[in-house]
Image 1: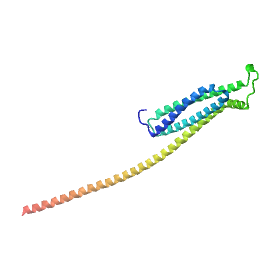
Image 2: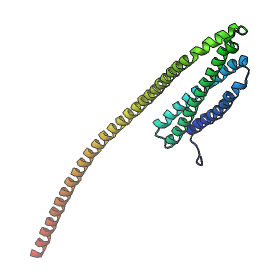
Image 3: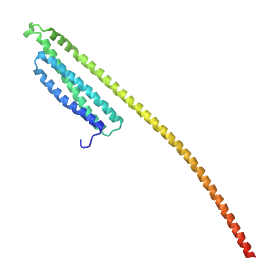
Image 4: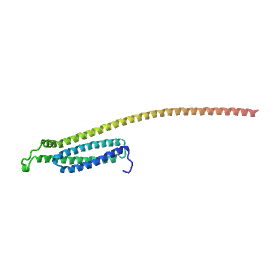
Length: 228
């Protein structure tokens, strides 16, 4: 962007850059995962899964910063909201890739327990059995965790919005009190101005009467002098 970023935008931009770099790296890791030996593949898949979960936490942080930007009526909110949506879509696709790799690992673990034509092969280890059972349940639990995470995000955003609304309410109450005080001051000022104007008008009448009296006295004196 050509213009200088505000402090809020700088924070959002840092999160955005970190999301973009990590999403690209994790896509590469998932693409490379099928070439890893099956005995090590599950551990590496778990590692990528944990890192993707951390990215989702980072995305929630970006969403919270965006809520602040929107509450402030920032003009750049639309731009950063589009950037956020791009990262959110990319993470959802990454999650799909993660589940696909997980399904492949599950299938290979199950097939490994059988030889050609269904003949019995070498016994699989307890770890492989536990891994296979865990992988069978991961899809359902993953969707449930995703739904719980989304609900948590919504609750967090709602709480944040409620706090901002409470703060805005307090500010509006303070402004309303100040406006009421200003209105009272204006009413008092208008009353004082009317009293002053009445006094000025009264003073003008008195001065006019005094001038007329003086003129009459002058006229009487002058007339008396000319009469003699």
